[in-house]
Image 1: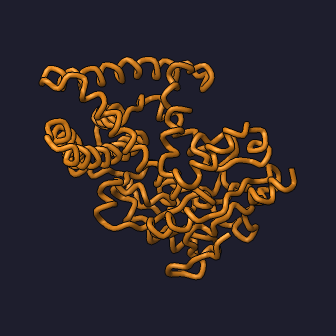
Image 2: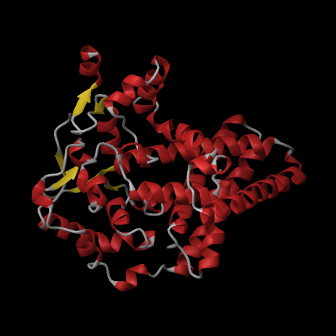
Image 3: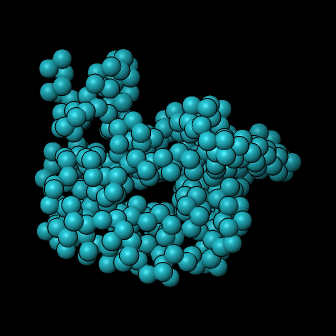
Length: 363
């Protein structure tokens, strides 16, 4: 494993120790409720006017570049505009993420409407995504319970067929920026069609069935407009490409936010141990809607993304003063180190890291 890098404190770890080692018992004193008490009540109030116009701007940028990609006469210009449109589609996904936590805009009906639109354009049924994402928050990095988990236990890896092991290694390194695409088709897309395997709560099942109608109605309306405008089914192809681009951006963020972090017993009540905040500059903060402030987000999901930078200093200081790690890095540095990281799996009971090279020798 790579050595830890330090940013501005001996206890502030970039790459989050690059480890999933069990939690040190010296960190038992700090609680999630204690950290939440540091958050001012005003921080739970979303800047609704600013967020509304920001959402309208991002939808307009996505639609505008989508249109430019459709009408461009040059294949290179079309590819460029499609790429930019896909990036803003990813940005809409992060807006939908904030809406999914009920934190983006007031009143609530407007929050849910914006979330529905953003996730529909992103290719995700809103209610099904919310259920999956809430499961992720409740079980971050916990074995098979976390739908966003990026690592495997050793017995899981060995039980996979050779072709499965090959593709797992491939999407862990060379094509890690595409890993969310596979995650989408594996767990998100079929959610509403196999509801009974995901939840037994009638309210969730009913919400997901209703949402599925809204999801398809929205997609049909969106593409009918382009069809009637004379673009035929070209918009379907371009939309599929922008979704792949958006999910590729998401792959980078999912990996940066939780990859190579602890999954010891304490993570149920200490979510900062499994999350990472990373710094990336104001332009990327705007595009990702501050999703990169992920330690703060996992400590209290109902704080609007726009308010996360403001609560970060006190949260970070309190974690460090309590003798615990505050996981922090830059986006580009993490990508560089994670890309060169040796593949490993975890021993199920001890969470010991086993490099694949050693695992294969011991088979």
